[in-house]
Image 1 (spheres, rainbow, N blue to C red):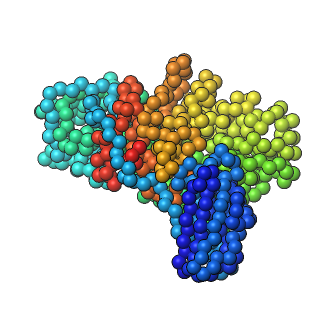
Image 2: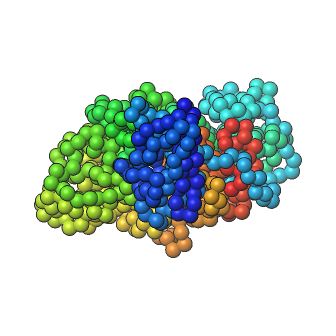
Image 3: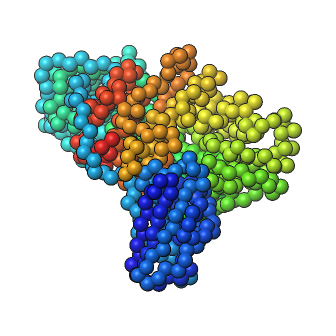
Length: 611
């Protein structure tokens, strides 16, 4: 049977045409859109779960087709580019399921000519060093000669990235010197015609110095400029997040991302494996979570939301987690795990049960269109799950921090829950934010007693009781304002404003581009045109402890689609986290990024050429 499927954007509508060379009676069209949808014409809407949509179609005649017109329920979600077309489309028939041809997904790699920029005048290095004093001449380098075993991880990294060999017994001698007067993570490199000297105080400084040399070897094609580099990181937290709940990335893809992060001196991997769509890590205390939600699609508890199609997904075993942790440790990267409470709990609710008040008849709809995605802190079953789950997940990761989620609580959450009303009276709470803050503080206190620090998104600071407290680390994502406010209330803050470092946002406004647009379109310049400590917030500069890029996977159907969404924009993130001088602006980053085009190509990492 040969099927055809065409989808295109017409104004604020999505026009589809489904055809077949064979007759199909009473077909049901299934797909995932970015948000809840309605049918304008051509069929009857049967079911929606968030963006997952089922539509009863007329019979398809032999060699014929049927039209279908849909639109998003919220007209502010009018489709902006190809990513907003139906993902994972298929038909359910009386005899089974039939996959439909997918519309073109992902960035059109190298489809647009690269935007030109002047040659970068400074040192071709991302991130930029604290100080670079050039001198006359260059040093021809085929490799670096050293027998120090501490350089093995960088040599292995160079091999995996398809770079020139880092260690070469016949190469330029690499003299390593320790200087206890340097601050943690700092290093100095002297490049002269006579050779190279690296001075550092600790393992991180040595690793960063050798990563710098590897970068320069690639950006200068083996002819390193002579001079003196003095360097130290601006922030201790230089992170990249990956949403593995909406799309299941293989372990190999995660390891590949860790390699890219190490190349750019990013040192925190934020592993987001729990959300409405799935809980993807093997845990002993609640095996039903990953066993029941790892796979989504036809006949599963979670249908084909966000491009799941007929069947998609997977879970990470304890052995998988160890592989990720081992690679991260070798690259001086720590891994932050995240669970999600109290919202984004659809998968937990349907897999476990007992965490919603049976007397609550409210219709709390999440921003993604889910019903029943909030767990109820007044229910004893909530704590029977969450406390041991939090302990087990935190215990798997040496970082000693657990991210608890706590974002996007629906406005009507718990609004008709008798159990919550009783909880409010008992604890003197008035609003839903008070309830959430009470819940988060209780969970954070429980973890603190077990030696675990809590982290959460910015909303966790809400509530009359001051939010989760307990020395928690907050991530400011809707902008920088909530982060500054939280810092002034005593929280440490990681800045990850969606308008600048959400890499699931489309690079451009071109309707043939790919990605979300609800926060902004994020061009390469936008990743640099902001300050982690804004003007006027100098009083809390010491509370801004880092920056982080985020990649959410609602539009991702294949692992490789992630690559050109990150590259080249991740260069700006890396520089923003390291360069204390803010020495590169947006146009400067575009010029500097040209030096890395060939580096990405040698890695085999796809990049967005036209952005």
